[in-house]
Length: 375
Image (cartoon, rainbow, N blue to C red; front, side, top):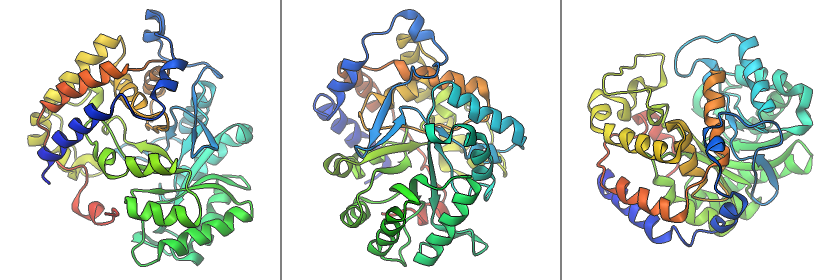
């Protein structure tokens, strides 16, 4: 199926299912229509943030914070003190869900996150990941052998300054290690109290089922945004059936959906977007109608484009908790303003009808990254 056909199928599926998706009525019941001042709110004071349960047991703020950009993933160099201050600022605004991984840096993101969150460790949930050969000095090679998993977890515990990991993901499915063996190793770590919940990242429905049968999953992480909706048809039915939460990364389309990128934007080596098909000059120019659509709906809902991208996502399922990343406190305050706004089922149908008329081009990953994504 080509991208155009997939987008049409995805939109049709969304239209047919919008009124029946589990949890929507509960979400809307919890959120009466906000006043204009609420729509324009750019922050959420501590305690005024919706929480959701992933897998029924893992309680997290409805919007988390992805800590990958802090290590210069999109270019730039950031000071440790500034990033620690940003993480603590997020907590003060009500964020209790923080996402990192040993490979981010490597190690830097975990080290800074551990120091930043230490003063209120028992009040937050930290997710981290194993699955690349960081300990073996092969950070781009997949490795989920049991001995590696244990070494990775011990390293993460040390860097995060904690005795337990709230949510441990397999970063990528390793085709050389049976999923049952991976799940069994994590199950042992959970029985030892070192891991409380576990999940998979960029896993297929088949791998999800195999893992869940050995040790129940709390969450699956994958890229998901208005312009990349593949999870809706690939894994959403499985997650809903098994009661597993979903944690989308890059929910703002690597800033494309925020409106700060236009058809003249260019990216160079050192910025993750430099070799992604969605960010070629041709794709940027072709896909601008989506930015216009997001702007239109943001204005209608009295929110910013970044907020609308998250509002759209949070309105679709009651078991979704996105983890947008940033290095800028103002951007953080902006997207946290999405926490109190929702689309009605009718609005979602209306948006999807308009979305279905837009032809998007460009894949989300470069060939090497795509080769490590479980199909």
